[in-house]
Length: 494
Image 1: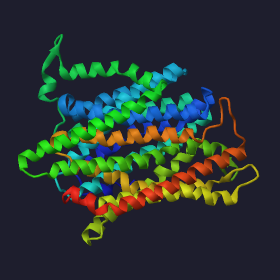
Image 2: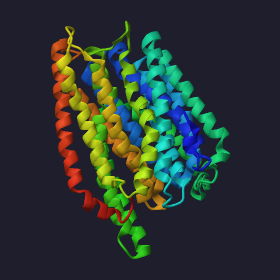
Image 3: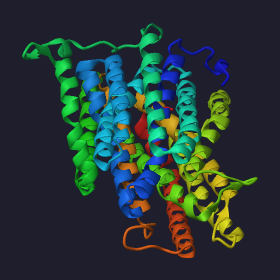
Image 4: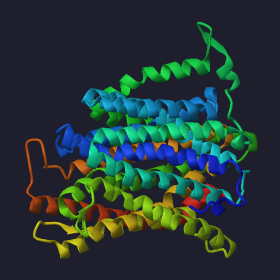
C-alpha cells in the first residue's frame, strides 16, 4: 500500500497499523476456516457449528471490556497489548492438537488475548491525537485499512492453505502472523511513546499477594479465565444472560461516569454523550449481527449454492470472505480523503446519518441474493458475482459505520474511562456476533440429523437473507428519523 496516506499523521500510527494488520491476519485466518473446520473435520451440523462460532466470536469481542479496564487500572496500554499478543499466539498453536478439546482451549486463549490486544491498541491510536484534532477520523480510517490488509491476507493465503493442504497448516500460519504482530509492536515501541497511559499504573505497581504486584496478578489470572471460555463456548446458551447483563451493567456504568464528570463542569454534557454512545452501541449490534453472516451462513452458502469456478479453477469457499477486505482496501483511502473534503465544504453527514446509510447499504447487499436467483444454474448455484456485489455493498456500509464508530468512542467518552468505553464498544460487536450465530442457525438443516437438498438449501438461504435485508431497511429509516435528537445528545461532537 501507499504509505503516503499516513503523511501528516503522528509517527506511531504506522507501527500500530502493521501490528494490528498481523493480529487481524491471525484472527481472520482462524475465523475464515473455523465454520468449515467444525462442519467438515469435526462433523458438526450447521446449526451447532453456527452457535459455537457465534459464542466464540461473541466472547472475542466481549473480552475487551475486561481488557480495557485492566489496562486503564493496572497494566497500561502497551503491556496489555503485549500480553494479548502472546496469549493469541499460544491459542493458535494449541489448535494444532487436532481435537475438539484442543480447539476449545485454543479458542479460550485467543479470546483472552484479543481482549487485551484489540481494545487497547485502538485506544493508543486515539491517544496519538489531541482532543478535537480534525485528523482523527482520517487516522482511524487509515488504521482500519491496516485491519483489512491483514484480513485480506488471511482470507486469501490462510484460507487457501487451510482448505487446500489441511486446516492445521492454516491455523499454524495464523499463529506465525500473531508472532509478527508482537515483534513489530515491541521493537517499534519508541515510535508511539508519546501516547498517554502506556506504562503500568500506580495501582498496578502495588504489591498485593506473595510479593506479586497487581499487574502481575492480572497476567496470572488471565490464564485462569481460559477454562471459563471453554465452558461458555461449549454451553453457549449461558451467553444469552451474560451478554445481556454485561450490556445493562456497562450502559449504566458509562452514564454514571458521565454524570460524575459533569459534576466538575456543572452541566449534563458527558451524561448525554454517554446516552448517545449507548444508542450507537445498539445500532452497532444490529449491523454486526447481520454483517457477520460472512463467517457462517454466507460461507456455507458459498460452499453449496455458489458457482465458484473461475476459468476452470474452483475458489475455496472460505476464500470468498476475501471480497470484504479487498473492497475495504480499494475504497478505504477514498473514504479517508472523502470525509475530510466533505468537512471542508460543510457537507459531511452527521454520525447518526452515516450509521443509517451504513445499515441501508448492508440491507441492499442481502437483497442482491434475489438478483442472483435469476441466474441459477442446473446445480442450484448462483453466480459468484452475487457474492461480489453483496460484499461490495456490505463493505461500503461498513466504511460508513465502523471506523467512524471507533473514532466516535474516543471523542464521546471522558478521558479517565477511555479504555472502558472502547471495551463497551467492542461489547456491541460481541453481542452482534453472538446474535449473528443465532441468525445463521436459522439456515441450518445441513448435517446432523437433517440434511436439505441443494434446491431446498438455496431457497432457505435466500429467504433468510431477504428477510434480513427488509428488516434492515426499516431500521435504517428509523435511525434517519432520529438523527436530530441523537445529535442533540452529542453536544457538538461530529
